[in-house]
Amino acid sequence: MTGAESLLRTMAAAGIEVCFANPGTSEMHFVSALGAVASIRPVLGLFEGAVSGMADGYARVAARPAMTLLHLGTGFTNAGANLHNARRAKSPVVNVVGDHATTHKRWDSPLKSDIEALARPLSDWLRMAQSPQTLSADAAAAVAAARTAPGQVATLILPADVAWGRTEGFALPRTVVPPPPPSEAAVDRAARVLLQRGASSVLLVRAAAGEPRGITALERICAHTGARAVHDLVAPRALRGASVYPVTRVPYRAEGAVALLAGVTDLILVGAHPPVAPFAYPQFPSWLTPEGAALTWLAQEHEDEVLGLEALAEALRAPRLGAQPASVKPATSSPVPCPRGPLDATAIGCSIARHLPQGAILSEEAISNGPALAAQTGQAAPHWHLTNTGGALGQGIPLATGAAIAAGSDRKVVNVQADGSAMFTLQALWTQARERLDVVTIILANRSYAVLRAEIERVGARVEPALAGKLLDIGNPDIDWVALARGLGVEAVRASTAEAFDDCLAAALRRPGPLLIEAVLSR
Image 1 (cartoon, rainbow, N blue to C red):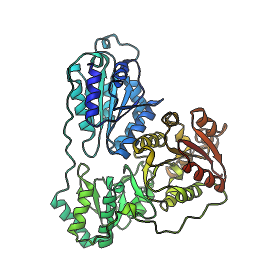
Image 2: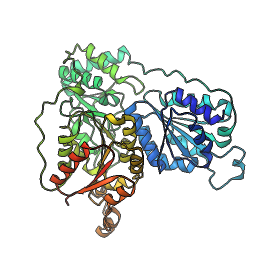
Image 3: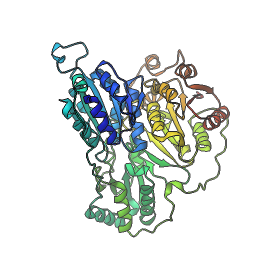
Image 4: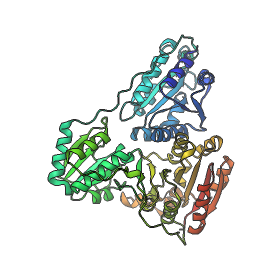
């Protein structure tokens, strides 16, 4: 068989089921080999930044890696923004990057680049394949690296002649060691802190925010000690909803995080790092932990957060709260009333809270409208909330696309998306149409980079109004999202009042397949 086929057979044996791809000439033998390995589903993306975002969304929902197929260094750099987000989320991703044949590189052809140099900053594991005979062993190593806790981006560079060269057989997958539990000493230290100063302590979690057992353990610990539960900005997913124990996300803005953590004497870190502000500001701190607060690690990022929290709950002798995990308790809140009047993020959040089905997946890149939206979606049925973890814009649409492929037809996916960042990767809508994915995309059309207008004042800059308008407004002409979606094969509607939007969303969630709602926000 070819080296490419041996690679794919090892990948399939290691559990890879999907290949998100945007191939070129150097990858044609890989594409040919895909036909011989029917267990790996090829999914075409029209832009590499969409491809990498899809792989991130798939990994966050499936909790296992997908593979990307990228063309040369130029394709990898196009994928870079969403690989940055995936790396911050600790999503397991395996990149296969086609390269020129080794015999061709000396001629310095126009598309030649130093792929290793380009890939190294965005990869936790990196290797250049050397031979068809060792390629499948490289593939086994790449998958094992991606699946190493807490999850890594692994990049395997594949020269064309290594892909088309001949070999016999293929390597078996490597055994992946599950993340270890935290040490008994770490559990004991955290327990002592909580028993002494629980009411002024915060537990900061990462992956546990999206796990029912993790939420249940947090609820036990906090109910017993008076501590608060908070999750990191870069948590890959969070369980939220009216019947779910609330775990507060660290606010994006520094002043919000400072207010949240004011008065905290102890920060117990569970797979997370101490919070820092995304940017420096003249009037706000970059280090957000209160001065004098003690840091105690319960679990390092490579350790099992859920086992650590459960061990901590037992060490504290925290009472059990019932047999049902926190994510499936029956809703106890009153029905959310239908929003009326002007259409804004609060009204949209209310409608989502009213209609989102239990078990749905919410991909949210609402940017400036995110806090108002999240304040309402906490009343929805239990769901997974996926956010932009690395701050590189253009994540929401492809993240939802990959999540829908991982979820299958059993779970609805809703993407709430700012209009400015939606333009970065709208090509993923075409993939939703081709794959007939069950995704509702809500475009928050405020015709501006609204978050940057707020940032001008927060950083203390002075920008002449006419110049600010030219760089921060995306009207004149207005982007027609209904026309764009239909041009990419996705049915679309427009709503400009709260009542109209509520009707559109209810109808969209009842029908299968992709649909886009352009929500024209009131000025």
